Length: 112
Image (cartoon, rainbow, N blue to C red; front, side, top):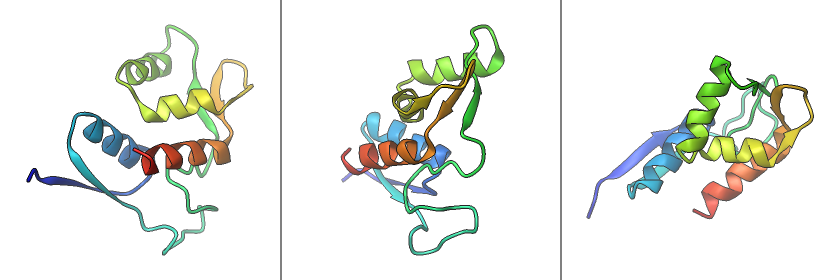
């Protein structure tokens, strides 16, 4: 039986690590403290809850934030997939509806 990769934390990085590892064929176990334990910043029990700004910064071609996001897109990033699916108008910024974003990510992880 193959080893299981344990990932601690269901934030943006933990969710993306779990998604990428599972996509590569690894067995993954994702641990998240919520809803059992809450923090003052969190409002839901969902994965990848964005707790401050809903902006993932500029999506303007040629900028460093854009290039990073483009690399993530090309790598099959769940976070970028969710961001595109829950995007809200914000000029050149890639901003998301926080609740829909967390719901999207949670549903994809739960059904993977």
